[in-house]
Image (cartoon, rainbow, N blue to C red):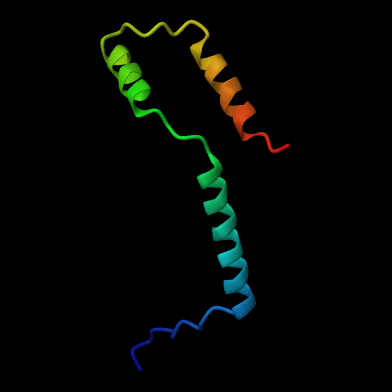
Length: 72
């Protein structure tokens, strides 16, 4: 014997729950709005050039993220 413990197969109900969770998260991700990559590239460039106006942007961004994540 090599001392390694043989891994037991996952319980069917455990596997079913995992699959249900994965389906839930996949559906949630698919429901998110599309990211506008051009806006992200523009913001990154402005940050790199120290031209990004950051007064209040963090607070507004966090408020928007929290608002988008609320499940009504």
